[in-house]
Length: 357
Image (tube, rainbow, N blue to C red):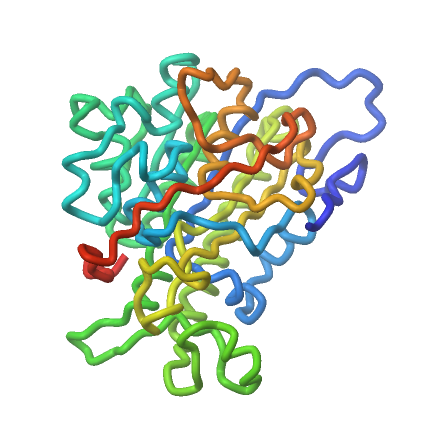
């Protein structure tokens, strides 16, 4: 796994004032950027200069993993609560919301608001279920866990605009954002006879294509790569706005980027199956406290919530029964490999339909 290059005066991204003998403690803050349905391999093919720079300056793991029901519902639920499907009980994108246990295993921002209500927490999502079901679940009385700003918007451009406004006009401590158009491109649109496809290869290298599930020259989808490139441009604007904050040099931001799932491993324009290309995710981390991912560890989507809470200074209460563990940070405890529970039932599983998520 890639070692961090974030040290001393080399950390240009964070604009640390090198040479200061006794720098004042900086306020810990977290930004999580969710890229729905982005396959890890596509980032090596698409033109993504902003993500490339983030990877070069921080940590990058292209072999992280989500649960064996590789749909958006369980994926985002696991990322944002820090527990697997056997605890939060979400195993699809619709019916299982009614049996969810977000009262017992809440969104990490709900935990933040309980322990540190003075922090400003912000959730901005293109896919409504993230806010409506995971954060503002019925078990929370639709109060959204006292999160300060909960915004569901109708486009990825609107996600970008809302995040830019938050960084410019407010003082956030924790921001989560979800971009959805990459996944839309992967699924295609039957009304316009667009077959979609999560295939990032043109077929020029067939050996590479054959290792990528149902990925062939026939179902290569340039629109999928284009959506990733557009999202990269949005992320570039957001990182620029982050650096432009007047008090940025006094803030200790941890930036994490990850998808909820991959796709195209069994059916070229679907996901949800317990196969590598559907389950494979990635994790990029950037921040002044970032040092290295644990050697030989299989990073997991549930580690993201645990890492966010840890960076923000919360002691991870054993009673929370989190499956995720803090990773990549200087003070993080030793990583302990844990088995991922299975929730996949082929007798009842139906591939994406939102469904298309």
